[in-house]
Image (cartoon, rainbow, N blue to C red):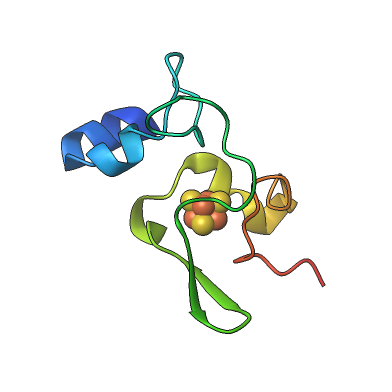
Length: 84
Ligand code: SF4
């Protein structure tokens, strides 16, 4: 099974890889490598109150698991998942 990081390297997704810290954890500032506070940088507001994922086709495994488990979506600031 190809890891998220291997897939992004194959796809040349420097924009996503820059969001990883030195041990491969996601959602850090590309410059400071400090954890991002607030919404995921790949969250896009299409219309007021309506969101989508800018990297839907290659989003991380943890995000692919939102739907069956409701796992971590709130903590990641992903408004693309509706918990109601
Ligand atoms: S699914 Fe949400 S948290 Fe995951 S990458 Fe996309 S916008 Fe970010």
